Length: 113
Image (cartoon, rainbow, N blue to C red; front, top):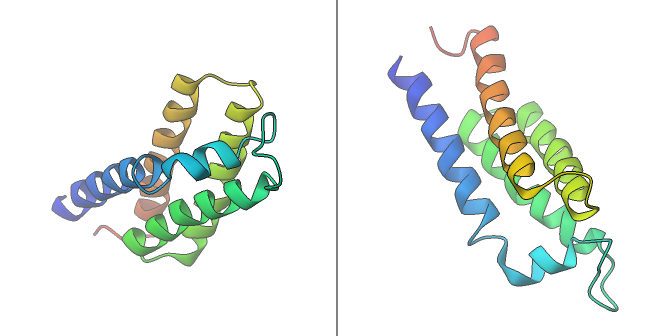
């Protein structure tokens, strides 16, 4: 039970770290294809930001597959927010839901015995 709670706490802390101080103003602005920084392709902001998230999930869970899943899903969610299809609150709710899904997958894989 301790390993499970530790993993949840680390995933949530990793998300806060990656979405705020590690994102910075440049990535936050550059990833927005609806309002890109002139001369900077939007994916040069979105892909590194999603890779930071994927790397953190991979390191915490020890799973390359979950790191890749986080990279893909985080990028899709952030792009939907930037394009105005979802709100900031929905964006954050989806990100947290993903972290809980990764924990459920780890439980199904028998990581927490």
